[in-house]
Length: 272
Image (cartoon, rainbow, N blue to C red; front, side, top):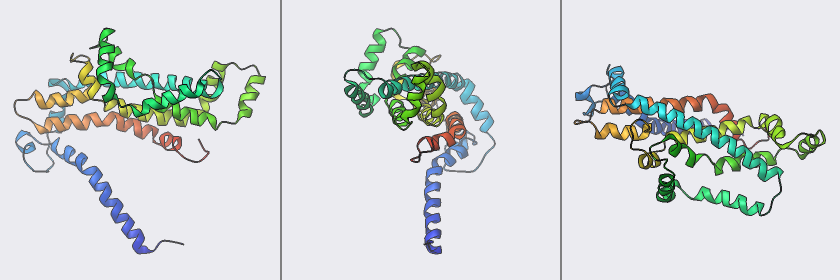
């Protein structure tokens, strides 16, 4: 039965309002990023012509450009490491048998319930004892393992027919070749979905980079945005919002490039 015209109109109205409320902060930031100092501290939402000037000030004068380079590097390394380790761990849980396998997987899932904030002090002491504070290693290595990625890949591998595994074993295909030649080509949608999650998570991370790094040459972009507020004698919200707008672009581009794989990776159908 087709929905009535009133129901269709009502649905579109509700969705339009929800979309506007979601986009309102972004539209506000875009408007303020184009304004000069005097206008940016007012309630005006007029569109100015200062975006390029504000963006240049944020990137060069306050070092946001260097911090974006740092964040791109750290995010790329963590995403790559998480993908490789998650693939390897899921392969072990699905295609190998070892003692206390169920307990090991339960412990992996248990880490999903432990937020980084709860471990921040112990993680800080551990990384400090290894001499990795104020370094890329201290930002990358603690987040190379992913319980979420392991779970996604494991569930995906369980849906792959066992006949394929048995045929590969008959042909003498070893574990690493099976992973490289069979599992990876069958998992691009899951890899894309996992990559989007990892990129957004690392790009928006603030607490750990704030604790682990004080050197501006290694600092990440979310910490840099907060520094924009503290390092100005008079807050120029045009510069702050221009910096915020620029930092939204990389994860947005990643999501746009991987949107189809992200959607398919979480699809409930068998088309993976």
